[in-house]
Each structure stands twice: as structure tokens, then as C-alpha cells.
Image (cartoon, rainbow, N blue to C red; front, side, top):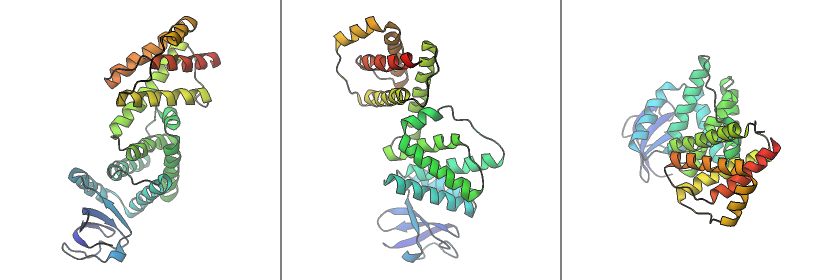
Length: 279
């Protein structure tokens, strides 16, 4: 391992160091911070894990979070990151070290106080990001087992968004907005078609995934290519679903502040017709 010089010990097991390749890094290891002073040269064998936090603001946020954690919580959160990295086989965006640490710390403290937050987008999140949801479930299981608590399933949904944000290098706020938009569109579909969609059905999964990819196409400015004959046929055959598809498109345009390709109405109408037939 390259040379590291101690800048500041944050506790017995964590310190900030100057790394010859990565500049400032967070180093973790049993007893690594004990009796360390600024300027000490660090023995590489003591380092178990290293986080690179290039953003100065995030470095400061992480330093502020550490004193709020006892050793059990800290070890559990480090284990959670190991699981995410191992299961996704990806180099995680550095933001997740701050944002997910903060979220898990807050969730554990909230649970201890008997408070819970419902996740209104849970089913949509599970369907939108199935791989990330599976990993998040494992993270919650580890936290619950290690700390002898019982975080609810709602937390799996919140953690899923953190993982997806890190894997796609998207801001968490953007991932949240897209998840909220999909949930809002589903609510409108149920209201307009006067039905309750079966959230376990294949048609629901297809609709959710179509909405997700439609949002991504809009963000990228991609066009599907319009077929006026099919559009006219659907408008005549399925006027309720066709008109509803345009209502959804208008909401997408207003929320994303981007134009939506007219061809999206064709595909949405077909998805809506399937849902209506099963309703």
C-alpha cells in the first residue's frame, strides 16, 4: 500500500490521512487511531478499509457524523458498505459514504425513539430497481441482526434509492424525484381508470419499467419515432386510455421541464389498455 501520513484521528478505529495518490482519505482499522498524532507515518498493515472523499464539503460532513456513532453502529455501517460493493460489484460513487451513513444513523436513532416513517413509494421503488432493492434488503437484515433492532420494510425502499444513486452517479434528489413522479402517475392511472392495480402483476411491472425508461429517454432527449396510423387507430379503439396517456405525458413534461416525444402516447396507451382489461 502507498504511503499514508496521519492528519487527524477521529476515534480509535478511524482517522483522516494524507495519501500519496488520493490526497485526503478516511482509513478504518481496529485501533488504527489509538495514540496517533498528526504527521505520524502509518503502517499499511493496520488499514482494513479506505474511503476516498474528494469533495471537501463531504469530508467535513463525514467527520461530523463519526462522533455520533458508537462502535457497534459504525462497524455495522462499514459492513453494509461491504455488502453493497460486493453484491453490485461496482465502485460506488463516493457520495454514498456520507449520504447512506447519515441515513442509516438517522434511521437507527429514529427507531430507538419509537418513531417510524412510512415509505409511500415502496412498491414502485421495488419494481423500478429490483437488484438494488434486493441488496438493500440484505443491508437492512444486517443492521437489524447486528444492532438487535427491527427496521421496517419501508427502510429497504429508502436505502434502495441511495444504492441506485451511487451506482448511476445520479444525485439522490433526482432519483427521489423520478420515483415520486412514477408513483404520482400510478395514482392518476388508478383514479382515472377506477381500479386498483395489482402491484404483483407482470402488467404492473411492465408499466413501471416503461415509465422509468420513458423518464430516462426524456432526460436524454431521445425520440422513439412516431407512427401516426397506429396513434390514430389507438385513439379510435381505446379513447379513454389514449386520452389518459396524454394526461400522463403532460404531467411528465411539467415535472421534468422537458418535451416528451408524441410517440410515448402510443406505448403508454397499450400498457394502460392491458391494465384496464385486467382491472
